[in-house]
Length: 279
Image 1 (tube, rainbow, N blue to C red):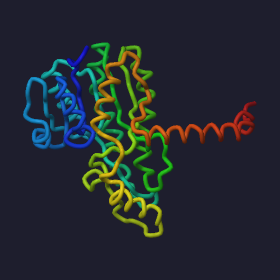
Image 2: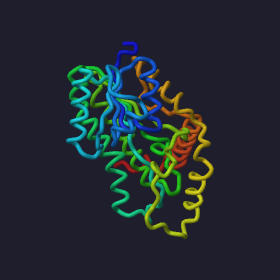
Image 3: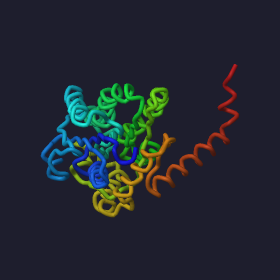
Image 4: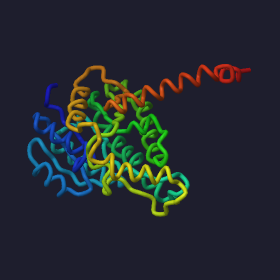
């Protein structure tokens, strides 16, 4: 289809979503981009045009999601590629994060994503084509990061539901891909995108050290180039047999292999216990 596909991108006013939208528009694709604030989209990407539609959307409000998708369909007549990119980080231990803090992270990162899928799939199913990219994280495959348990669990949830989604929508000619980025140089680690616990517990020194490292050292020095990530997504979207699992970044690639080797080692070590539980 070349560059005549219509892309619908959530969380497109900054970070990976913004870089993807810029790249797509520069290459002549049509883009519907969402954010909580339409003016931020217009400031970053320009006014509404034949190829671009900025949309204000509250991810956790299903009526708002329905309205945004309807506007995109009315404007472009279709949605060919959906990128569920919106979300935020949460760095705090399982003990110190409140129930409200944990649930809010799930509301946005998981249930908000489901709102978008639920309202986009009828159009893709009717068209018998489409591709859904769900942006997880390497933390949605490898979770051994102290202080990132809730965030990682939301991204594990995204990965798990996408595996089922891919099997469900395959008969309709629609693809689904889980994207596991490593560290990319965006504003993800800035205060606007990474929340900390309201009631930190001082005894968790390793987590406080992780906070400092992410805020002061890693932020601005991430190895991943978000423009190259955008190029990778465009390339994958044009493949007839796209992957279900897509690891992006050398760090993500290496951590995935590290986990696979660890699991394989434990499978071998504990095989007798594992297979010895049948009748």
